[in-house]
Image (cartoon, rainbow, N blue to C red; front, side):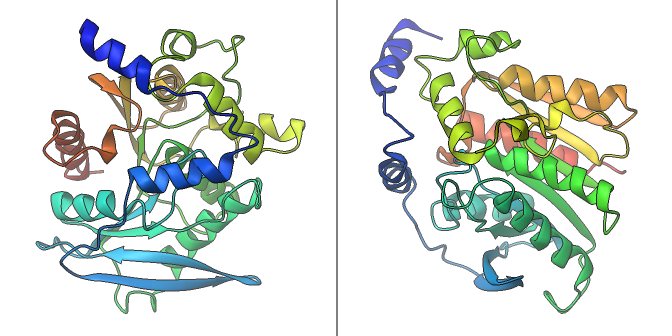
Length: 304
């Protein structure tokens, strides 16, 4: 990374007391990811779960493959983000892959701490896998996908699905996922220290997000919070993990892939050089976004 870009990133990596000002961070996140209504097929639906409704937004591509679905969980540290702020990303995703994208507006912390958001995601996945009335026809394929905290949730839904035996995804795509519970100076992963300051997303902010999401200390060691800590990672979907070179979460994402391999799963790990955490929100013509979708499309076209 050149010196000028490095200096600019340091200037942009502003400090914020996230625990006190998480609502401000939500506003900043939305301002950075404004809702732009796509100029093609889009449908909002609500899926009933217990005493509440979980909104989902369905994006239909201009060119369609044989009705295949990407079930998308957005990032934002389990605290920020929604289906509006991710509509640009999901519209691009649908058009570039040819898959129908279903984006899930799961409950956010701290108002709804763990495990509420994870259970929302699991329930929507269960409904899409088992309730044929949602689309009025059977999808040929359903793939779980998420970025950052959403990558964490995609991995968690796959673990829940195996543990509960109600459905089992065939593929999952984890984009710069959070898979571990500790992002302090005690972290075992070098990227937390190497990339933890000066690259927009800081290790302190990740830790603050985790503190807002997980209110009980013992839950930090729950594999539905930190999938890397699972005692058993067998029988997981064919998995693509994409990481970014200058990301505090880089090493834990790749470590999760290596542990999945140890348990006999089929895993592809790709690191995008010179990229920062969150690059998926860049314009579609960005070299990092184009590389990411090149990798994703290759993975989606692979036979299981």
